[in-house]
Picture (cartoon, one colour):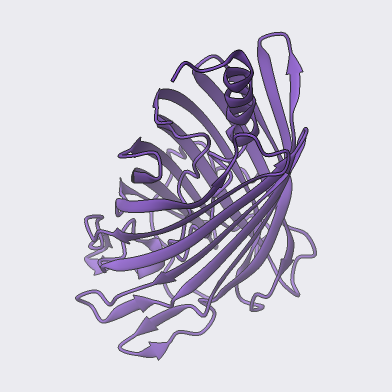
Length: 330
């Protein structure tokens, strides 16, 4: 059947409505949760993403956390050690930073079934009591599938899409990094050493230039060969967006709220103190779309967190990415 001009225009508009979704799912870096790349209008894609998160500032010792901390992002040539059991000084210059580069891909098997993968490399940097540490390596890759349960887009003034999915995280990252012949703790490793499964639900509703997107993910974590397990986690992301156009350039400003929770690390079935994650992050993002390319940048800052007095607080997260879209499934 020959496609009408009005149908073609409608499909082009739907592409714009869903462009905002593809990079809004950045979850807990510590607990290992993520949502991956959410779908929009059935286009396969390949993406290179850079993600940076920093922890700085102690509760009851320092009132504020700083996103820009000297040495946390750039390579520090005087890194010499990983912190051991030295007395804690609660310095305002202490930090933990997680810098990752991810290769992400999506391919539509059919109009309703997609397969996704994420292959990350991560650098972890720490500074405690003027002692610095650094660990770089491949992080556990992930493979997951999504099914488009609701697909009310063409011909609907109130557009909706719901995707349910499941996946697995493979224990291929390094969990044996050492310092002074002593293995680092699991939170300073680039892998967890466990087979993990996760389940997610993505729902979007949009009308005219405005829309809301919700992503919910549950992650069930296994135990590695050292008897370590990161507690099961939940991640909830909600973003509101608006569509703007300037000639051939499409802009999608959005406000993103991200809640992440896990009880913490278990070693031989015993919960380790001060390893929990319970935080709400909030911040702006912007997508710029031109032809098959999309550039995205997102900032999220801590607005709520329950953290022990000996733990560093979340300072914020920054993400930047470039995506190429290809081969559309109708």
